[in-house]
Length: 582
Image 1 (cartoon, one colour):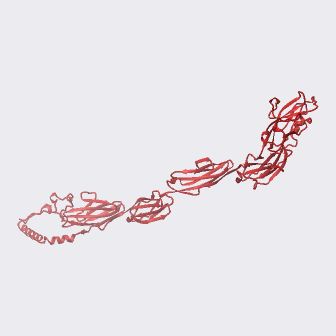
Image 2: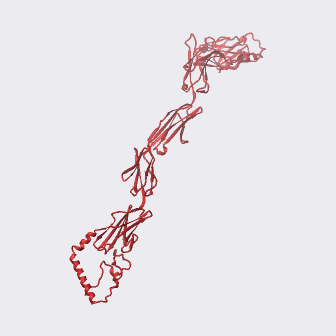
């Protein structure tokens, strides 16, 4: 705002100075447009005891000392002036009334400078006053903008031009104020030191869009071609607004990602990239990139950009989605179950996008889901057939991963029907095939011999396990003629099963005895009968050999190394010794 005094201080000082001392009063500075004129108001005083008949005066340019021969602007005694001021200077005041006001016309830049007044009362009563006025020759109006213009707050902008030329009065108008407001012209106002100004005011509420707006003021002098313009750019302060930012970003794992945040504010904002409250990068700038080299799934998430200055702040977020192949699936759940139980197995993985999950066994698909991260496999009432290796496979367009897992179903032994006994020459081999989990114990029982052999007796039984199958083989030597009954018994903690092993090839053995060697056998039987009769006649008190007493069953060997308890060494072959007849 322009502050004006009702009584110019200059004239108050003049009135108070009436005391008879040398002194001069003029504005310390004054301005005027080039090509116009200027009136420099001036008052001076001298001691009362000096009563000059005539008072003269001299105006000097840029120096108060005559001995320096400064340019004479005006001289009342001779009217001789410096060539620069010829026809351009005259005295408006009455020196007799102690008024030394000077008028300069047709101003040009070289006339700008300091002006000194010297009083000449005659004789030695001459005095050059140190007080002086500085003339400023201008060619643009002065636009005064407040030091701080804030968007949304009313502001007053003024246009001030000097009005110190009594011959030419300026008229003011605003340029580029459309949309800002209508100007108010205050008119001609007097300043404290006695100079005059023309003032026009413009009130408006600026917006952020007005920042940098070029506002002008024009001073024109009617009836002349003189016209002067001045401009000022509005520096409107406003809080940040984020105007540029990535939308949601998708990137493949291992690729390069650049996130951009741009904000509009005045002054420039402090831009900060953050994630989960952690500052990743910041700078005072209008835009800021966040570069992520070889992105990983761990960098997937929401990123925030914060823009702030002393007038406010703004923030926005962007979601980065890192696309990647499935991780190796993990399996949680039952891996050991008892036959008949319900089994639940959960297969889970992580990928982006979510994968297709499949569980299969032996190339048979058991369960599958699309675009899910978990797959639950439920097997109600598991059976031994459910035992085995399973695969969980996860795949999307970026890759495939698989995990194998085993389901172990525990159940009571099952003796398979392929179990049997078979004769080969003088040997009988009994095969007992058992399916079981956990591994069972296997024993062979010969009821007619009251003998039991289990797989721990490696001399008699050979066992081999393959998966859930346990194969045990019992070898009996010297039993091909009269194969015994063999019962296979298998047991584990879930149960016991027994099976009498069928003899394969028994009929073939019988026909072999009768066919090719039938005559030999018949002849041997006949000889035996004859010998028996003969011996009976010769010895009436014949006692039988101790080695043949007792049991009804002949001693049998199951293998070359295996001996039935109580069998004498002489029966290590399949033949039974008898006494010959004589």
